[in-house]
Image (cartoon, rainbow, N blue to C red; front, side, top):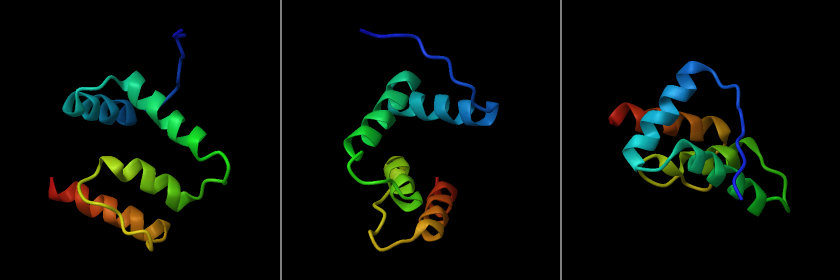
Length: 84
């Protein structure tokens, strides 16, 4: 069963989500649902900033090395974004 959910998100994030969803041919709803599924699957251990960044960066080209800290992972993300 599906239920409507209203989220308050800033305009620039919505534009990015819609652009990403068009490129990947998946709805924004499915993106959000998938994100919550990843949170639920890792519920046994608390999420760190680095683990969250790693999950979100799955959409970026290339893999994130496991030994990166949060700041390094974010720098990696911005570097990858600049290459597109």
